[in-house]
Length: 79
Figure 1: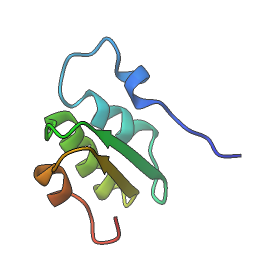
Figure 2: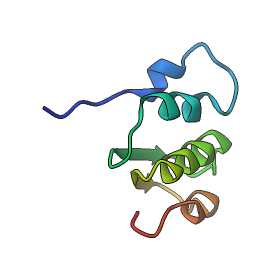
Figure 3: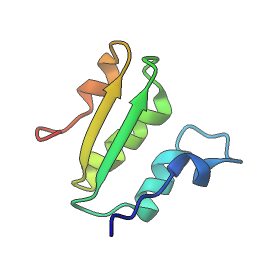
Figure 4: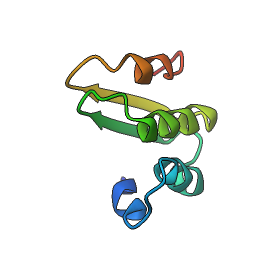
């Protein structure tokens, strides 16, 4: 099986920028993959979530419509 967690639905109801990162910290594991879709606004919430994934040694795949320089800088060497 290939389990997936919708972090956005877990985060609903929380207004802080770190809600996604906290949900990932709770549910994510080393060697999991995080797929991030961004509209190109260098979202602080996504930046914190990517940092959490990198710290947990997760694979991060970033799909962005526009240059997300701040997000790409947070990716790990193997992402």
